[in-house]
Length: 274
Image (tube, rainbow, N blue to C red; front, side):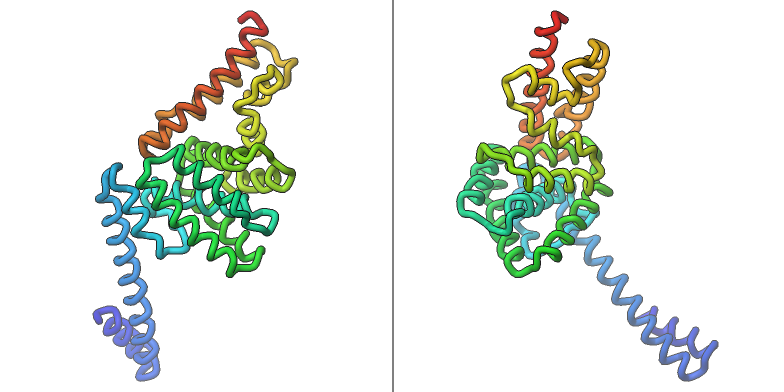
């Protein structure tokens, strides 16, 4: 009410009766905007009261929202962006296959506790339903916007872990096609990451020396110093402690990824006698 009166008085002073009417409406608009911001802030504060063990229920409680915000709880932002971007990559061919959804369910069960996995699965179904009601261009715009929000709100190491999860989802069916690779590179750019990270992540888990060099992102002709430098860089980027604030389950997944990086490094070191 105060903003309405202030707007009306200022309008009256500068523009008489007509100015007062305009000022009243401007004040009304500002008041409703500040009220909305206050509600958003209270909602965010409410979400932040949940501990790590209860984040699954917190995440579930926000299922009615179809957009993400930089002010979201970091774990919520991470999970929601993982699901939304995964849905984008999974359906990049314009189809949503039951087998692809089952791959995602399996991935969730393997990487998160049952409570979080169930909440994420419900949210995933909602996302796919929303996708069906949108055009391809509108859906891509929404996903890209989500990526930009993540890029502005999360640390590079957290974004790399997100990209790592996405790569695991894409690889889960044992096949990565050209469209999925291109989509992942688009996602990496939108997340503010080097597209080279996509090829590195896709090479993880390989057993050959060639795979190991791809993981470190260097050619087999690299010098020993270049090998060590490339490993140190990845070790810093993918160290599990860098994502500890996203939850123990995310940290544990990061540990497994970190071990795969170490395995690649050891394969190269052994071949070179380092």
